[in-house]
Length: 75
Image (cartoon, rainbow, N blue to C red; front, side, top):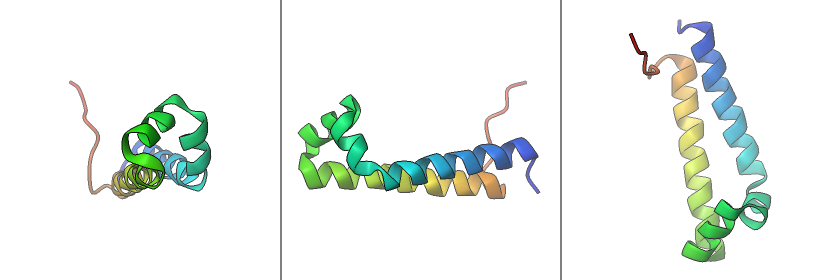
């Protein structure tokens, strides 16, 4: 079982990426980074790039919470 702080961080990453996925239109329309994605990839392309990044974050957060991947620890 991974440490509690690792479970918390992984869960927080999953929840924040899921919230971003739910509000992806707002992000693309109202933030400078979202508008940059739309300028670079177009309306539908920018949405797909953002969705892909957020799904990648959900997968990584889930793997972190399950203990499959481990955070970097400095000595």
